[in-house]
Length: 279
Length: 278
Image (tube, rainbow over all chains, first blue to last red; front, side):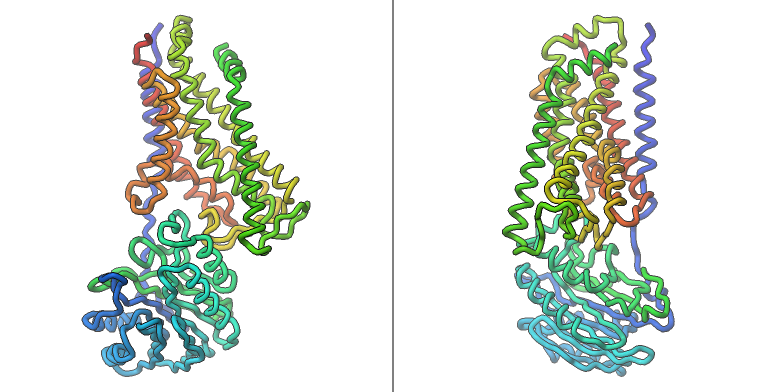
């Protein structure tokens, strides 16, 4: 009896090869080309943890990195920047000096370090400042006033993160500026799919609750657009309310210098009644 | 004839009864876990009551999905591995395989009949498990719309809402999709089984291999290895529980996991075809 075994075996190898080829994805890289993408009538918001990874507990922005940060911000031309991990108020002054004319700013605190809100061409009015949170109202041409809160949540304690982020959301949701609401910053939690967040959190369930507390009220502008921090984690977020439509958003890669470990997260938003396309 | 014989042997082995019992036990433990979680962890924020129409997001469909997901990852592959071990290595150890091959049938027919019976058994087991989890969810908790939130089960990155009818359809589609995915550990166990002459070794090695590959695929530090591990693709059916299914991505992952299945099958068949029976 002639064996059909080798033919069958060959057919199986061939079938496996076909399956593997069908399973290939052309490219799953999501690259944000914010410089090309910005269109008229949009508000550009940036959140950036500019600290570095060196040392026992990381360190705030190094003075040597100020020119590079200023260059990136100038290139992006944002309406609102929410920075975390500034070393001191005087360093914020130094950064604004490096940025040149037309910038206004407000400084908040996060432990011994500083939060900052900056605007190019707009006016900033603080409405709330407490440890790790800074709330401002942005007034810029073409938009109604926008309320924004910058946050840098605790890196080690999910309970602390929950309190900080929860209170920031509550505070923001009580504002009713006609231009909309923005919450952005380094939330220090990562609930993205296909990651084991429990390796980096003392209570990943609590982080899930915390994230959902925000996400059920505001839209996560850079959702699904990749990691923002080392190692391959999405820790930096930019949320907007329903009055703002996200035109384009995501982490802008390749802008870190020295030992910085976070990418800036950029979002261009427009009033939702102007028919923003979403992401 | 061979198929009938294999089916009869499968039934008489009591493995189906054992598997069904173990899965029922698993669902019972999940139910207990859900109940205590709702009582102690959520301070009453999540409901866990005996209702038919449970308005909470935490309802019988959520329960069924949780139970099925963890059963799919951690329990069903073990039965797949057991089946592979039992089908080849066990027959070899007991001398049944020698007896089999004295009959005028090709090795290919013997091999593929065993694979088909095992695959059919796994498919039935998946369907039974899914139906049982849904039934328990309906009877003890109550169905309702299916709401999924980010982080939970790592299934979604935004809030997903499916109304009850739509969600039930998705469960129905999940049956064949999950069954297809489970063929990969099943055929891996066949491959291991063709290299051993002892069922315990075959099952142990197949289970260990599956768990190692699963853990490696889960740890993001080994992200670069993921494309080369079948465990990275097995949970592709979770996409069915999105409001808008990314069909192309789902089919790609289904093709990848099928590729591994067929490759393991080819390698197992090669070994089975060439090995010398003692």
